[in-house]
Structure formats: C-alpha cells, structure tokens
Amino acid sequence: MNLKSIHNVYFLGIGGIGMSALARYFNAMGKKVSGYDKTATKLTNELVEEGIKIHFEDNIQFISPEIINDKENTLVVYTPAVPADHSEFVYLKEKGYTIKKRAEVLGLITLHSRTIAIAGTHGKTTTSSLVAHILKTAQVDPSAFLGGIAQNYNTNLLLSSSLESNKEATEKNYVVVEADEYDRSFLTLHPEIAVITSVDADHLDIYGDVKFVEESFSMFANLVSSKLILKKTIVEKVKTGKAVISYSVDDASANYFASNIKIEDGLYHYEIHTPSGVFKNMSLGLPGKHNVENSIAATAIACELGIEENVIRTALASFKGVKRRFDYHIKTKELVFIDDYAHHPEELKATISSAKEMFPGKKITGIFQPHLFSRTRDFAKEFAASLDLLDECILMEIYPARELPIEGVNSQMLINLMNSKHKRICQKNELVDAVAKEKIEVLLTMGAGDIDTFVEPIKKAILK
Image: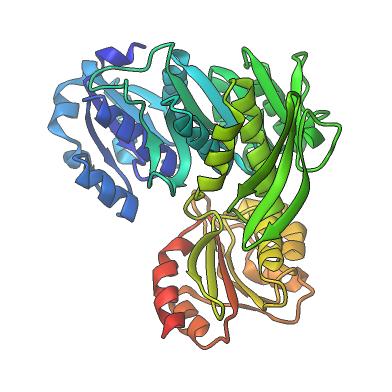
C-alpha cells in the first residue's frame, strides 16, 4: 500500500513503546492520528499533549469521526496484544478497513529507506539507541524507531530533519529500527545492514522450541541486502550463505572486539580492535560488560558506514543510555536505586551481575515481577538461578499481560526453586511499605509488566 495516500491512522494499543513511535511518526507526517489503549500512562499522556486523540474504553462510539467517515483513506494499526474479540477490532475488521500489524507498517517504511536493523533476544534496544546516537553525532541525520526512551533525546522516535510534514522517507534516508522477533515481526523488514546481538530461547508461546527461534533469526539474516553483523558466539546458530562480520566483547578471533577493559570512576575504559586499526581510550558510562559488547556492535556498524574514529569515541562517551535499562533513580554513596526492564533469565543475570560489579561489597536487594505465565513456566529453573545471585529477593506475582493463568505457575513456584534464604513474595498493595522497612544499600526493580509504576512511590519511601 502507498502510505502517502493515507489521511488517517488509528492505533489499537497506541500506548505500547513500538506503537507510540509509529503514532509519533505519522503525526509528524501530518496524518490525523488517534487511538485506543486500555490504560493511561505517562507515554499516552505525552501523545495526547502532542495532539493525538486517545481513549481508554473499548467502545466503538469513541472512535474518531474522521475514521468512521473516511474508511478509504484510513489505516488501522494493531498490536498482537489486542485480543481477537476486542469490539473495536472486530468492528473495523467487519467494516473492511485496511488493518495491518505494527510490524507490517514498519516494514513499509523501511522499504523506502536505507534501513539499519538491530535484532536479538537481548540488547537490541540499547544497541539501536546507541547506533542512532552515533549517527546523530556524525551528523548523518537518521530517523530511528526505538524500543525504549533514549535518555539523550527523551523519546523513542528520532525523525530526520529532512522528513518534513507530509513527506515520507526516501531511499536516501537512514532509518534505524529495533527488529522484534516476537511473532516473527522482523521478517517484514527490509534491512540494508543488520546486527544480531543474541539468539536465546524466548517467546516459546509463539515458537514452541528454540530451534524455531534460531530458524526465524536465520530467515531474518537472509533478508539483509548488504552487511550482516553477528555476535561471534551465535555465528553457528544463524544459518546463512551471506558473508558475516563478527564482534565480541573479548574474543580476539572476531572482526571487532575489545581489550584492556577496566572500570574507573564508574566508567568502562577499553580499546576496540577493528579491521582497520585499534581505537584507544574509548569510554562508556553504561554498566555491565554486556553493554561494552553492545557498544562494539554499534561501532562495527559505524565503521562499516565509514564514520570516523573520533566521532565514535565522542558518541560512546556521551551516550546516556535508555530509560528502564539500568536506569539510576538514586545514586549516592549510601543508597542506590536502579530500575531495569529485565524480564528474561539472561537479562536478570546481566543486570544483577552489573550491579555487583559496579557496587562491590554492597548488599543487592532485588524486586522482580515475572512477565507472562508461559515464560515463567518455560524458564522457571533459569529464573531461580538468576534470582539466587541477589543478596535479597522480593518477588511480585506474575504479570499476565496477554495471557490467562496456567495452573501451578506462580511466584511461589519460583520461590520453591530458589536456593537463597533471603526470599519472599510481596503483594502490590504491600510493596512500597515493605521496601520502606528494609535496610537498602542497592535496590533493583526488574520486570516488563507494571512494576515501573512503583518506581516513584518506592523512591519517595526509601528517601524518607
């Protein structure tokens, strides 16, 4: 379809991080944008302030008149999280509206751009944000659809200055996109350059088995038209006949890797080895060796695009990270409070390990809200092992998201699998008061559900 012919865009699930970026894109293009979501959030409030109409009740009567009266020029975008029996979704489908998944629409945008896609079961949000920041620093002027709020720009959407109102992307525009493997969404994209950061078992409610996860990433790799960049440890998992550029945090057999990694004054300092030479005196303010590795992936893209060493150095040093990715809310000598989106065992392990590395000798207390009954069931032992890295663990009940409960799958099941002696379950209505009574040194809140809504109340409580 031709996006230029669309006058109105209606979003079902407009408050999601990926959906909201698309909504902002079409709003900037001069389209009439409106939508539905089940709850108001800080993000939906921002969209409303930007002139986008949003309602929070599943009711056909609340659909904007321009949508009802102009079916031919309207595009409906939905997220798979919207249930099939959602009354607005059913109505729009029955009336014959053009309805597409978010991923399909993003695919249409990338069709007319020089697309840099970042894929992987972990690390893609930070890496894609860092790539966009390097390109901005190099004055390449990209657009970027990000899976989180980039701290440097306080948004999940960057628009090229050449994208004026009513003017879509052209083949000359670079677009950085986070390529989502959920529901095989990334197979709609048209990447010129791509990075795959990791291929671990996840979304088994969709894939069933890790072999199908790997198969899907291989299919994505084969969509890349120019340069394919893979983390060294996954090269064997991704089946492709294409030439591969590899990267690693410390494997000297990779095309891009780091050496002499050390922490000074809360910053990582290291050297990056590239095919054209060694970049010395590199620094990164993000904690965790996994983020050093993400920075090497971003550097590989920059080098392949011909961006100069000093520009890359400046960009890495000035990158502030992504909200809800090891996001500091309190950082004093006596008290540290960090919020993180971690919701997979490997992500929990990386976040907790980073905290222990950054604050040696401090007691690490973690509050974790499991996300999805199926994910909790599929990785129960792995979750327990990661949570055992904490000195003290507080578990919330499972956030169901799009799922119905599964018998026997709950937070008590995880507690029973953990070896730690310092573990307990806390209900939502008790959480803030319970944390306020703890002797906190370093506190982590982790999860992809609604645990982020407790961040400010917890912050106020522990500062009293």
